[in-house]
Image (cartoon, rainbow over all chains, first blue to last red; front, side, top):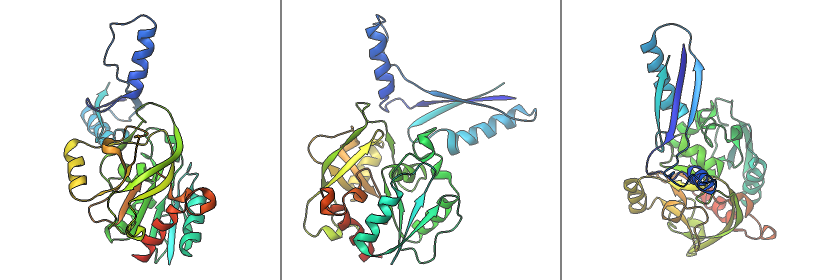
Length: 79
Length: 221
């Protein structure tokens, strides 16, 4: 099964990369864009076919390593 | 006296830390590989050095914080052994949950490499008692992710409990909350700081204020 963990900085945490990208987009003419945030997706294969178990394990991986829950929130997706 | 400098893949300030501790305090320094499960017996000070452990992949210090040796470092910290995390070492201590908060990308995105004047906010910690009446120290910073962040409640608690040890004087180089440059844990034995005492241990380097920090903590061991 394919698992995806989407990690984003929590709202209220300064996203300097997002700000830089916003500036670049404005410079290219897309001036209606605001509040750009940059996240990351970590995807991996999990063996087995128990979807609920895979989701729970991906969540545990996110809490332990893939996300820093002081500053990031995450969303798990298992196909 | 003995000190351990932990070496992670990508650490690059480990040898400077060893030299700084040796020359400042005369302690015997052991270099400890991150895959080891134990620290040398009788370690009085553990140093997590600066650098780019794991290439800063995922997040700075995130994977280093899960290294086998960190179990021993945490246990030693819980026993009251002194731990200093410098730069990447500070990031590792936060990721390991040994210190609160996190280090974000510098507010203006640039990697900042320069000398900074620090205010010694708490001169009563094991690390700063040696400054004896001095309110300032001069060291250098060199980092791209030195922007200290914690929620307002945590920041209030850190300030209220005397856990803020160093603050940047004058211009805040990286956007750190409340100009925080270094903090200790509640117990006062674990210090994380972005400036480099390992680059300020003798006058030829521009400042010997880092030597005072190492001497101070060794005297308290």
